[in-house]
Length: 455
Image (cartoon, rainbow, N blue to C red; front, side, top):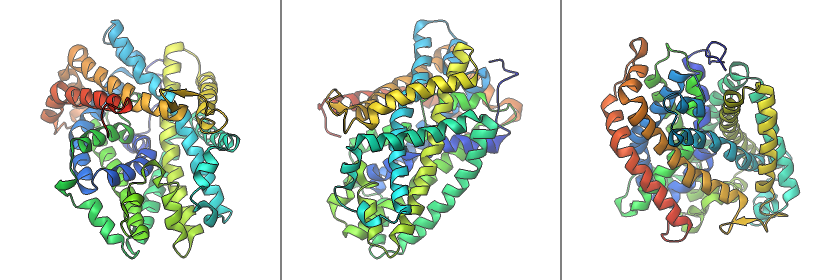
């Protein structure tokens, strides 16, 4: 796709809302609260914010700058600086990650639509049963139906294009998401016993600190900030030259971290209020949103209204992230094969259907398919988040420092007189600290998967 013909965002707001939409997803609403609850509440939040302002900031700046300076998706962007197989492999890893994430992410998005549909039907009491979630995800054919519904919605928005589809949807969904989050937070904070949960989540306590708090917070940033998924390179390629990369990055950081904090304030205090601070409920893990929250909602006066509002919020977050992931995959296919967007969307749609079916039925009819003793959805999550993303981010650090040059990135950021206030932080992080962090994440995550360490 030629530079001149490439789609673009209408301006800074379009990029910020689309990039924030990519970042604000199930990683914030679903994953962040249960990890914060498990790994020390306030101390986890503090570590996460410090890392987001240094490590996360550096990776967002680097990826966005690479995208804008090349006007290409990851594979072509990397190839523009070197013909070495190592560099090209780094580009392909960044490009393949979204193709692998969209199918299982759409499966979880289907779970969200199912819960929303049940709340709309007035089945709040049924959803609060202990066995409801496990009964549902093992019914592979129903899960498949909702997976297809979610995937179809995402494909439709991407089909409409960058400005008319992604940007327009983000401009509607992101402000609504913010308003819904604020409404839920205000309501939760009025619940008896909720303030104890607020203290646990916001006030750091060093006795809850461990090395795994740092490792887990680092890993969460990939999921939450959409780092090393090819998304930010792709969206950077749609950014106009007169938009400040640093200013846009700061807005994305603020939006993303703000939503993560609000998600924590929605869920953790609610669980404290519901359970009286019971450790088993607080450490509910991945099931916190689909098992514990329906119990919390059933204990309030208007569970149907609460359930509809909450799962509409989660659905908006899931859709914006899935749209960004799919757009990155489509952009790569268009750039690398020269095919049109429509054909690329059909091809990605087919791969999403095939891989998504393995995920959606992986706890039911296809439960006999296991890789490293994991159902397909769990394995896809492990492969992309714990292995491929750290490797992809290492590739970005390598390309910037060895082939592009840090000075060239600085020049791109400062184009048209734009600021680069945290230039020194970026320089130190991209050259030295980020690669160290990434190796630690990779080794720790793989060691945990094989049972060598307990996270």
